[in-house]
Length: 326
Image (tube, rainbow, N blue to C red; front, side, top):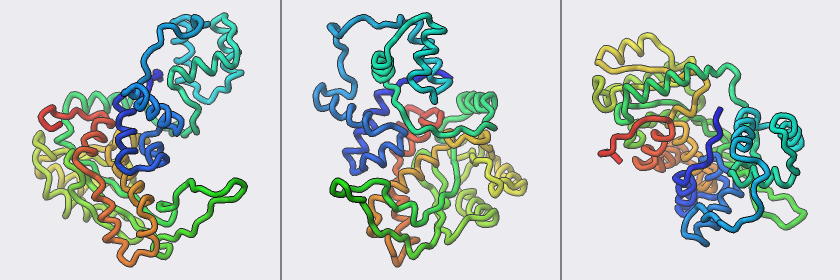
């Protein structure tokens, strides 16, 4: 793994979402950043007119660690993000032959934009070599306009429940929240760089027959032969998605069916779209609570997915965007 700082583009996108009605927690969840980072970028924008603060040539004493040592340290943090500060201090002493205080180490890490986040477990079965082959495949054979990805996402009472609320000091923040009398719904969707080209609301969970019907009747008629636009259908490795008959139908019209590497939702732009839909649902939770027309409301929630946002999600997933389509 290689340490990568948060790009200025992502910082600007975060402030754009805040300016367009998203609450802080929604932006954090959608982009995978911390609340403190958002506050810092917003303050920088207000003070300096940029999300990145200008460098200060008069700042403080020289770094305790030189450039090579700092690089080795950041490589360690990328490979072992769970380490405590005292463990990192011991590693610096043993491997870099340098002494650094806890506060100086913490400052060095924070200045690099590395924050202490809740750990997410990556599947041990993830095959990095296969993921790299996938990256090479989409770089060399496809542009984003060729791609359709399809998946399903479930919504229930947990979807609308906001994780934080305000209350007087010493009191809990509580709220009553039920989603259409506790029923569970699933959204089936297919996305291109133009946004969703098909959506279906299903009561309960999606099974293989429902998914097959959605693809064959709602999506396949909109596909073209490779290498035209909308000629490649990409699915994840969920069991209900795999069907030899579906592959035969797709390939019979000259289109291509591909499956993502296992445990690689970051390669699927539709995952970010579902996060945006869930954020809309939480923002409008009072309307969704005990809704008499949940299917209609969920379809309206899907309207948050625009062509502009879709192009960004495809870009995040590694697909090349034709400059003429930007």
